Image (cartoon, rainbow, N blue to C red; front, side):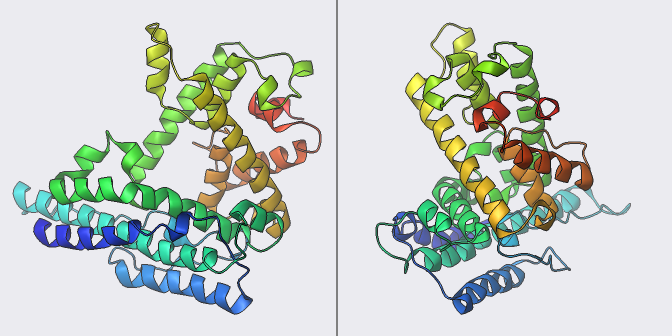
Amino acid sequence: MTATLSRGLYSTLSFSLNTSLHSNTIWHPSVALFSHVHSESYKSALRHSSTTTATRVIHNQRINPPTTTLPPPLVLPNRSPSQSAPSYYYSLGRAYLTFYKTGLKAVYSNFKSARALTSSLPQSTSIEQALRKGMLSRGEWQLIRRSRHDVARIPLFALVVACCGEFTPLVVVFMNGIVPKTCRVPKQVIGSRKVLEERRKASFRRGTLASEADLRKSVEELEKAEILHIGRSLGLFSKWWDKLGEYGLGGVPSGLLKARVRKGINYLDMDDFAIERDGSVSDLEIEELRIALEDRGIDVLGKDNAQLKVLLRNWLKARGKKTLTSLLLTRPSAWT
């Protein structure tokens, strides 16, 4: 079984070498092409998935990217009283392999959809420019961004799956950075959020933030402690950089830190614009809502759909009075 999967995974690798997705040339698709691209993504996901019995419906495709950009459902077998341990763990391993294979095929499906969006738009136009000009919807923009993220992780992750087979879940739990978003099991997603939220709480407890009067700044004007807090809160650099700093080994390089924080803030500025233009907070699917809040350094664990919507609405409302850096350096309770 593992050998068969290995051949399938390595055939999947060939698409990741295509660099057209990473070019800055994009085009303005017609409505017909947009519908075709998305419907093909959904059909492909359904054909490749043997773990789901229901189709998740996207109600607003302009604001929500396709569900193929998220992990597929993971259905684990129940152990019967008469089933032996080797038999059960073998079926458990097969279930995980099916999940990973479905996730990898979703990466390929997303890649083809994203390539269709980026390959025929005017040359020398970035996807951010296309979003601002209305050439891309938020859903399309997020599809392209997530596809780029996942494609970059395919070669190493596929190699791990091919080598480890049924033991892959035991290995990748320690290698979260190499796993495409479509291949992250529920425990991995929740575990990552727990770690990030604890790290965020610890950073706020440090008490190194500037006063409210000093918060209206660009990234270049922020103190290093403030930049570090934003980086920790958004998960822009590994916690191991903090460990190095604690041992007096320098920590995260200043240039890398500023570049990532600047990029993160620019992304949030674009995403705020796109959410308000292409729909509303109510239009976001529940997992997309969680992702949007997590991207903004807001805790999501233990909160229901209504609470999450209030938090994002408050963020967007506060944007009219505060800068992005101000919001990122304070808790939601300080925005009103």
